[in-house]
Length: 495
Image (cartoon, rainbow, N blue to C red; front, top):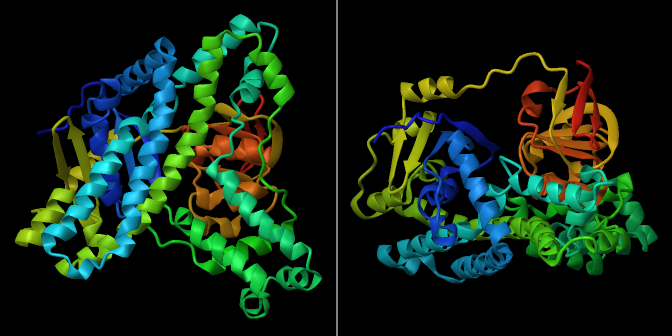
């Protein structure tokens, strides 16, 4: 099997802090399993891994055709879009429920057959989640097919209105996202601290070790409860879950910065009046779109939780095979089985540590290593010239001006200051503390139902997404103006 270069390739996502152990699930599902939900797969997918960083690519026309296919299915039968949202919730819950059982099992007492069946079941449930879980992304993430269709409805029904301004209230969900629920829980603790002068003074000092020794039991119990419930969502795709100290630090940051609580910013009265001008079917389409924002976050948080429990399984796998965690995370599931049962390693196993290419079509996949990785990367390289202005999709309206800080992981947040412009490839739950301090948010990737779009609306922070080039065209210290009413970022001064 060789890579099919017809139709070329387009960069879908550039993802830091991710591993192949998890990524193989959805990469394979793209070309094999999506048809179970929508009757169609992508024709091919290509991914390049370097340690815990990856980029993946779709065929250019193939990706557009798939987006149109999904949107047409929703337009022709809104009940399909409603089913997508319902299935995401149900399949997410099933996957998490199964994964939680791992913590209750004495893994060491299991035979290799019993032990490996746990991973096989997780991979099966996770793949089934993607059958529906990916469709909301596909409808709008790479080509704004769903957004454009809804904007055309606005032009038709509300010609006197600016579609960019109207689509925000019409598509902002009233249901609370998992992000809001987590933040409400955290701010409940903050209120208790502020109501106790002694505790407030303790947290204002910001000394975590002193806080741990002097905090009163009632508040500490609340923090522990919050930590146990939400710690897995901070662990991203492969890292360790949040330490309880991280929550002490986050609370200190909230108190010091006086940041407002995250909340749903919905113009309800205006939204209701606008919806009255639409047909029943059109209202259903806007509701499906807005719920995509909720179910995408629900799915992602479920994945974080499930992957946390799978990390327990992975640690036991490494003990049984004498592999390091890093080595195990570079393997296909079928290769992991061959090593466990037959001590048979893939031919290019050692080379993978330096980087590899994964390519898949229906029923087939290959892993390439060595010099060919550089050759493929060079062939896929995008050249970006001098840019004075960057354009993207409006996620949350407003204007801001400030210094750019590139933030792609939790460790990058240390350099982030109040009023900076947060520029990221995409945002994840572990970046929310920085997002709260941002004057504006700009991302390379994501559609209007993305994590960045949802959080920026809830924070009331101007946000432009899907620029494709922001993290490459900008660097720390650049001064930019973000016009999130027109979707334009203007470079004022280079650092």
